[in-house]
Length: 436
Ligand SMILES: Cc1ncc(COP(=O)(O)O)c(C=O)c1O
Image (cartoon, rainbow, N blue to C red; front, side, top):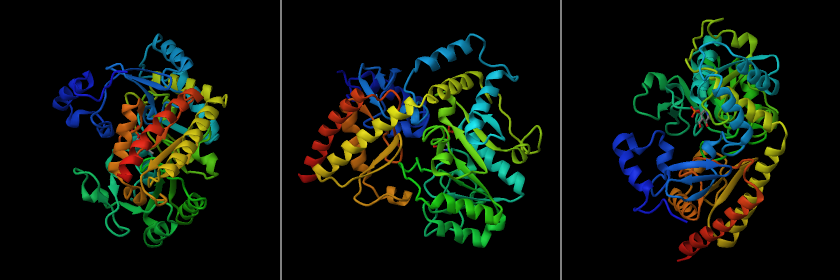
């Protein structure tokens, strides 16, 4: 098989052009984390991505989550093409947005309302603005290591020692904005309680990834989400469940159903667009009607409820409703997790594995990873080596330790077996290096 990782490859040639045209050579930073440099994609099908160098890769990135049915699922493709033939942008209402809305609300909030936007970033930005508008309060609480998109309100990480006030995690975010965000520690209710005791009456919303997917996968402790629900209620703040990753991934009802917790607002993205750009805010009527044009909290978008995204999302959910895709994706993840756990044990490599349904992460640390700060202590150089060794053997996992691996309905037993063979070789090399 040809390789995209050698300096005589077309990928390397294209990457060298890209660094002169795109900042960092890419259009979204995580793509640059793939080492030795990002490969270029020619096409994708099922569980596989094919590079411009003719390399076939088993894909565990899956577009960073949306492609739960795999690449080019035939029913999604057919429905999208059918929609394209009817035109792809109207600037006016159309029936597909209603159909997809009804489906999503049926699983998330049957008596609620929804606003479609274009990305997860826009969804959380809109939800937070809405929470502020409705409560008349300014502050929000977010969790260290949770990611909610690339807008100013949420680009805030903890300062030192359980920081009271947030500090910007990007240049260009005014400190005045970052100060409106309190940063708490995931799976640590005490850290939230302390903030709420002091400032709870000024907090508009607590926003959380119910399963952290952006510091690698970190599941919530059983009582954590319930505790957040109670704290939000006690202080009259809204609980925003950011289900951009978990929505329709943990099951049709997402993390809300999976963990039995209710968000006042739920943000969605990724899977509900079937691989096309999308985001959504779901909430009860009395809150949602505060959005423009019925209310005074502004949201708008040329591409909101884009017909092609609506078509792809609707077709995806229809296929998911058969239940089979979840079974395949879940059992692929289970098989891989079991194999990796055995390989970790046999090789003596210091690693641990977190796993929820069809998402998992290998962390190169002996300690449990229960909070993002634990994930940051993992050996990232080792992870990068792991990623590169896998890539050479035809398996694509994210270049970043801080991302999840995703399985899909296209990850059949054969695909998983092929991956396990590659993993065996990789752990042998890593184990040898660790001993030597
Ligand atoms: C939990 C979560 N929220 C929001 C976002 C932002 O979504 P988008 O990249 O579509 O803007 C992401 C992106 O990965 C996410 O994982």
